[in-house]
Image (cartoon, rainbow, N blue to C red):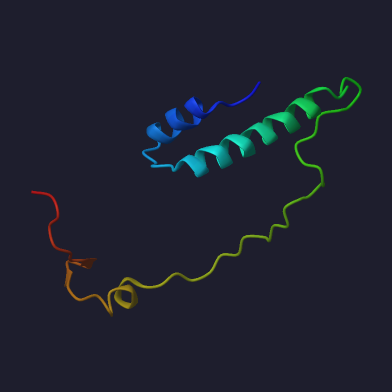
Length: 95
């Protein structure tokens, strides 16, 4: 499979990109190189290879949850420009 310049122009139009002729040539070559490499990979026999999600195994390092004291309502509202009934007061944004 190869990418033609018409396809490059079509995709650029969908993405609302304005490409020069030199850019069309460059992107067509780069995409064809990528597709060529994918064809090379597809030709490999992988039937005896177990699937894996990552090439390198990794695991999450998690810490235990600790219960901590929360910020009081008074402390939370100390720097608020305006406060009403124990809540932040903000301008109305929907009419």
